[in-house]
Image (cartoon, rainbow, N blue to C red; front, top):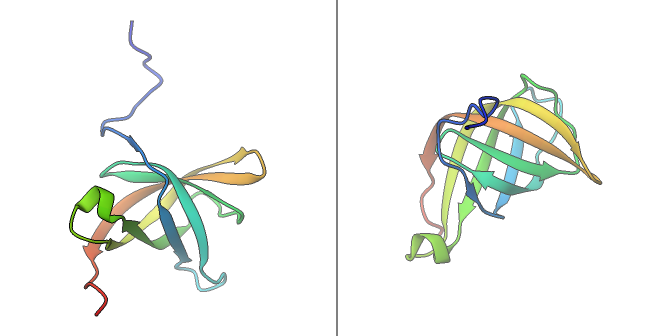
Length: 107
């Protein structure tokens, strides 16, 4: 029998990728984080910072050459925090992706 508490619609991929998180409230500076899993609808990441649910963020996700097979690709996303939970020494944060754009390759 399926677990009805799992409401995931999009398949999640376990990936440890670097993130740059930029809160859109302007009160906190950007900080680095690491993804735990990614889907086309959201991302779960681990960080040394705490953000409250509902906080709007932008983040830059870097897909490595091993994934893209054509060099690193950076994607700027905007979204909001939907869940925050303790995860050992770091904070686990789930964010919904509301929009994204591919950034131009560095020259």
